[in-house]
Length: 58
Image 1: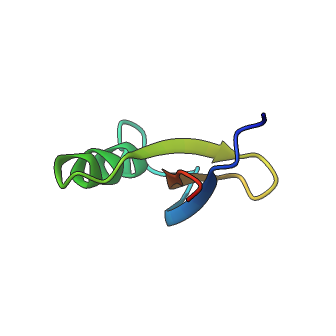
Image 2 (image 1 turned 120 degrees about the vertical axis):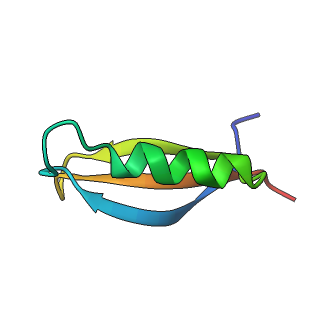
């Protein structure tokens, strides 16, 4: 049976941030520290980083 989980976008960050700055990763780490299963993915269409949370199907 295929995975029926959904994803929630928690925050969006532009890919063109200052060199050495990782705001999407920092935000995801903050969410993880609070118990939210967050991770960073790249949206190539919009050239941005998305912090997402996977929500398992009920």
